[in-house]
Image (cartoon, rainbow, N blue to C red):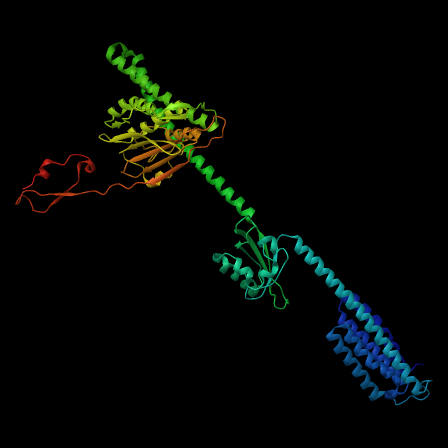
Length: 571
């Protein structure tokens, strides 16, 4: 029967099989390596016990076992193997006989020791070569992985950066030049932060430090300064989005950030916002159109319906001829007003669609101004407004569409008369310039407030307009003027202020735009005019009457009427 030592040696031969099964089931390589090393140490100890004990040449293999564990790269496996070897040697020293009788080696010690030593060295050399091949394969794999990663980072447009806890850039991807126009080396340290817009730097640093401290990913929107030529001729700010993540066990680099150019998305968002604002403005224009047109149509329609019913009703026979002619005249005037409203809408539609019949020719602007002023004189006299026209009879010739210029003048003079109170003045003048001719219409009316001045020329807009407005009109007069002047390639300037009157300057080029050239609404420039300061004079009552304190009295033009004579009598 085999001895106990032989039985233990046979059991140790099965331990590598157990280690393989343990590794396949649990995947714990250090534990499996320790079990296998324990089996080898036990086998060597048993062979040494059977071949001379502590003096056996087989013990040379005890030095190989820890070295093999060291090559595995596992500290736990190395410690476990060293413990197994120490236990085997201790067991051999305590329990194994010093040379078992009849179980000595067939070789002399002088031959056995070199043989076992060479075998151990050969085994160790084989393990070292295998470890070297494994390390070389791992290094090649890492180089391939780094090459693929660098290729991927070079192919994408996103900028990838590695940061320390203070936000400094440790490394940057090659795509830095495409995003910022600067090489990756220029972004290291504080190079990237210096390119972040000053207002966005606190958010940038807070995102990096917050991710490093909490480990939670963070996303922040930034504006990045790029090199000249990257986004055009001059340096510009681009909108970027940075997503930061913490990297565990990465040495100095604790945070990795991916920065993406979102300028296009930002521009699309701005375009959507502009489209939304434009839609809201269109809805506002529609509301103003309904308010203005309904106001303009309601009054004349009521007059037409009401007086026509009177003329056609049962009491028509009792209406005298004079009254009937008066009613018919009111109906005619109301119909004429409706026709003017419709014509204004049609003219605006033709101008916007490009179907306005535009035919420039040589025009005497002075004669045109005099004719339009004569046409508007009756309306001005009825409103108590003094209309002043140029006194110079000499012709002033320009190339323009006479019908369009006539409509421009009528609209401007009509507006000036409409918004000038009784006793005011409207003056029309001409002024030669280097590039053409200026037509100036100035009034002493109520003027336009600063808030409304910026919206002058917008279709259907009237200063102080709405359902409660006091002046008639569709709000298209100045829009038509702007479109007609745009056909000529001219410009319009407004100078006005609340209570300070209004001056409109229409600038026409000496040679008007040709009929086939593209046209756009005339540009409008505005300037705020401040009303003159009020001047108060003091009037005293006679001494001893009521009290002797002076009473401030405003001039009649500011107070809205003459100063009572009783207040102007001096004692």
